[in-house]
Image (cartoon, rainbow, N blue to C red):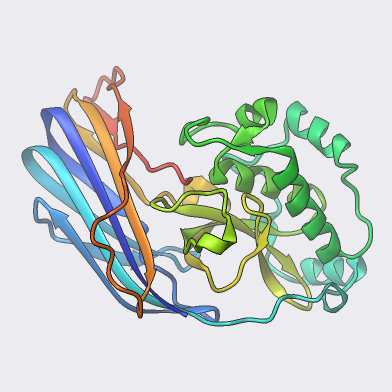
Length: 316
């Protein structure tokens, strides 16, 4: 399936700020599961955009905008083909002994250790006890069980957490957005000594699918490594095994590695970030207008260097 993806991010400042340095991770990956056929990134005010690949193979664009300005717009457009893949069979996933043997000879340590947003806590231990979290069956069967359990135990509530919320916020209230679902699942899976990583990207929404996560936003899910199947993608927000509707942009230990935008600016300004995302099959008519924007507002924090972090986009 081939998709057209449009992702527009607007930063507004009051009063105007001077100089912004930003990096952007919004270009879909090209790998065995999908191919990014074309990609463009436009920035207004105009900037000299540079690009590199980070150590996990994610494409990162970065730029510096000098001068005084009240607004920045970052507009990305991609054409991406997601390749069909059969659903994994639990009986082809290998046993726990196979997993341990593969981990012992592979380089998976970063996806097994705690990271910025994925750390053991008392609230996590409570959930693990409720789920009777322990190695049983085979690894894929248990992963599917956890995926479903999180979907059933937690409510999807937009704006119930912030972009930098720890997992305890969602664990206490039993509600969150896809970013929280992914972090909690990663934390549980790593406790089982299964390598697990965070995936940021987009989800194509079909009316018949009844997804809980909304259209018009970025999405997040997880990938866990199994010896015979490789990295298996699971979406606990929607209780799915990821397939052709999931478009991968970046992978990391957790959200801290893969925010769509990240940067700093000079100036003491209140800021407003708005995001609009559309994902549509290439053979369908272009939407007449973009969906309503997701808006985040913030106030500057005291900083002796007069530098302030740009807003980041929470993954819904």
